[in-house]
Image 1 (tube, rainbow, N blue to C red):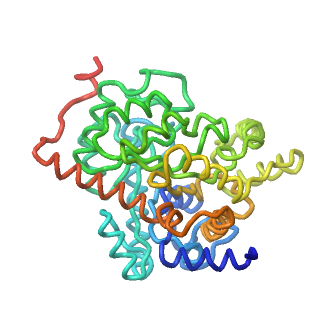
Image 2 (cartoon, one colour):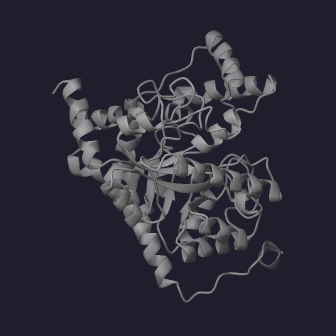
Image 3 (cartoon, rainbow, N blue to C red):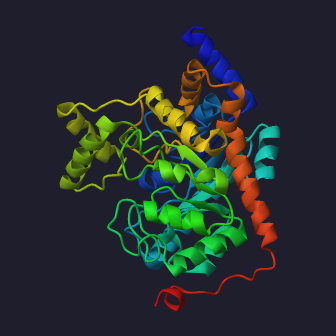
Length: 396
């Protein structure tokens, strides 16, 4: 079968089993680049060159459901982080109000199915980093009430109750309050997201959670040795938990040669007064100047497929998914440049003899099943009262 035939088959498959993508940072890009002025970046039009994401390319990529990240940087602390998270949530709500023919609000797995049946892209919210709740379970409940259906326990820095993969160990995984956060998320039906967290936090969360966990955008550490990726022993725990590890496309997490290059590129950004995650036009000019003198290692769909092959072998086909991290990274693989690129990954998997059934589980069934199972756990815990525990009461 030719590459063109594989791509045609991939698009047909995605028409039947579209991608449920675990992580897209469009709201943060709109905050940083447009101050939430949605007229400046109207995503009903092709925004190639401005953004990784718009509605025409979501359609072209076969995306059926998107978890929009309501991320805020972890150097925002306390109530400032809470306020910024609320602004991110409002941005998603404004997008849903602005594009009702294309984007459907979704809170449950059934909502995702209904949006798909109606020809719309189901839109869910995920909070990226436990700093967003400012150590408050009441704030966690408020985010759930506003539609947040997963929370990543940390971002790049520790919280007082959970260790991050890219910070120095603080509490050795999850503290007592951190375990209470997980239990309260189970009670609510909010998915526990273990991307960004330390290995110790992964294991503590898996030992604590009564519901499936997810990794909304993480790849395999055995294939690319980066602390943001998932070790094999943790992947092997997912079948018993029912969780789903959603492979990401970020080159420094999938391509070993890109790890050191990205470290030096981020140092260059800091030296020029920019945050390493800055994707504004000014920040990208600094990146481009660095890249001109230091050619960037290029990841491809094949690079990502290597991770999926390994993750399928270790965790099983029922426990893997996709979380591209578009608009949250300065660089993308050459043939996964934006949200229109998913058919290229599916064509690569078809070339590796992945079955139609396996691909349907990867793109569609697995994340829906994890969310539906988390909803069932929440119903089983309906007699459990909301927790009034505090960081001080449990971790003093």
